Length: 191
Image 1 (spheres, rainbow, N blue to C red):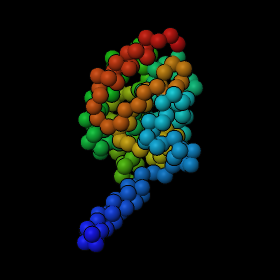
Image 2 (image 1 turned 135 degrees about the vertical axis):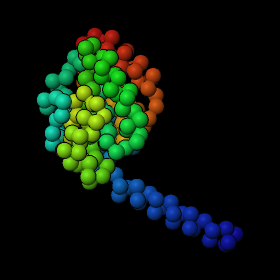
Image 3 (image 1 turned 120 degrees about the horizontal axis):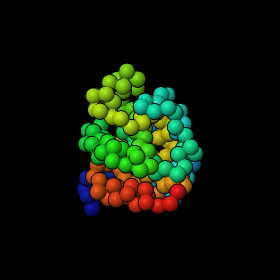
Image 4 (image 1 turned 180 degrees about the vertical axis):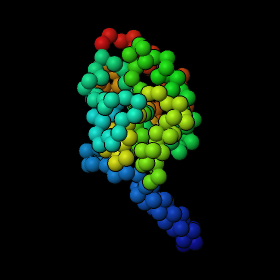
C-alpha cells in the first residue's frame, strides 16, 4: 500500500504543476468574468453581448459598437494569426462573411495575440492582407474584449442575435455546418 501511494505522488505533483502552468498562461479575468467562465466562455450564452473594449485599432472597418449592431447577426471570432487552429477555421469564417454580409451578418475577428510579436500592427496588417481577410478585425492586444467575453480559447466563435444576445458558442475547429446552420436560422429571425 505504501509503495502505491509513493508512486502516485509524482503523478499528483505533475497534475498540480500542469494546472499552475495553464493558469499562468491564460490572461487573467476579473472576478465577475471568472465566475462566468467556468465553461470557458460558454457561460455567455443567453447574456447580452459584451462591448468591444480596449481595441487598439480597427482594420477593414470603422470602430464598431455592439449597441450599434442591433438588428444584425454578429459573429465574433477570437483568433490570432500564428494559431494553426485559427488558420484552419479561417476559410469558413471568411466564407460566411462573403455569403451572408448582404443578408445582415457582421463578422468581427478579434485578434488577441498569443505571442508578443503578434502585437505588432504592421505584422497584423500583413497577415490580414496575406490571408485575404476582408471582414472587420479588432486588435485586442490587452485582452480587454477577450476578458469581457470570459474567453479562454483560440479560435472561439460567439454568435449574437439581432437583439444583442449571445446565443451560440463554439471553441476550436470543426462544427462548421452546425455554425452555418445557426447563422442561417438567426438571419431568418425578425429584427
